Length: 118
Image (tube, rainbow, N blue to C red; front, side, top):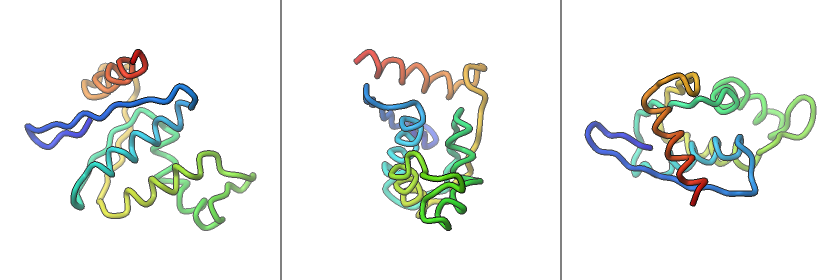
């Protein structure tokens, strides 16, 4: 869900043969790719994997050739796509506790459940 003041764009989708982490990454990538010009973005997520990956771990993975210290990086394809998608924007990555009443988080959870049913 992208909000621009009073305007909004809702993007949904799914893949039955994937993981929650891949869907979290895909959602962030698609949201950033939907922006037509460089923007200042506040991106909210309830995924610590996404927020910490992009804000804490990404630089190390890149320096090691998209690998972790312990070995292969899971979802390297999506981390590379997210790195490219974020490059033209100024992003503040915000974590919210899932299922805790945050209105936007509750809304995107409902959208995700609806997409799963389709």
